[in-house]
Length: 298
Figure 1 (tube, one colour):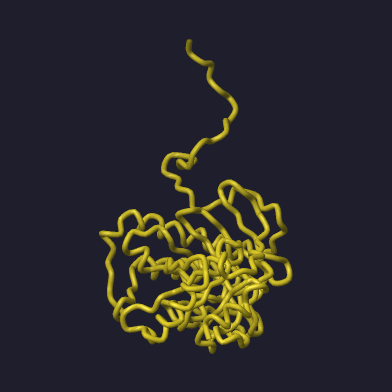
Figure 2 (tube, rainbow, N blue to C red):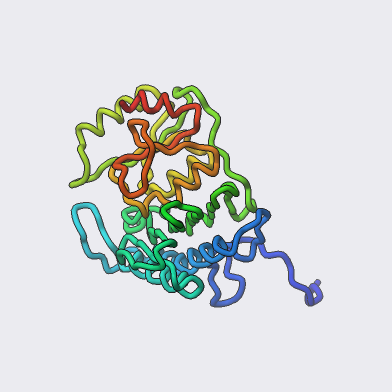
């Protein structure tokens, strides 16, 4: 028996395009349950716009035009295009702001406000077809990061934070869930993330000693190759700690705010205060594990 035609829209099931030829660029149709400032809204829209080309190119990584910047450090057409999109989208609404990006360098602005962006954190993952990468975008005002967005296009997870207002996650199944770092105290139960220095980068023997110490005292170590997501996962309580050496401001600016707004601590590996742009190492933890992790890594 044929069903009568519907004159009202029905609920969508699955993740197919909403109309023919229209591709999802993120979850803008999901209304936030937490208050967002106009600045955060601008940042999220810019990240979604940049994600469109990344998702398209990720499906055809074998056809990407890739040039090599250095041993194990690649730049692709995809991240260059994503940064151009971020710059253009942000300039439409905040033309006076400066911009610091991994690929295009720095554009001076009004001297107070500066976007800090990594258009494709996890480039090596992206180029090898590993679906773990993100767009990281932060706003620095008078030398202090006050807003941050980290968006994973493949999982459609959006992490965002504003100074003094907390950190949140939006997913296809949850809206504006507040982020909290884990409460674990015992390192034997802790899951720790890190970044392993690759060919041509870092002091490998010194790093291996620290990794051995962490391996011997914790429940496990993970190395996923995207520092922005590592920090977001600490903020979400998925990881209990994260440490790495030699990161740049665009790798960590948004994630640092995310961890702190979720109740966590960010220091240098030896335990001193972390300074964006000058610190050579980073350690993000909950308050219970900070001193223990400093001791383990000493």
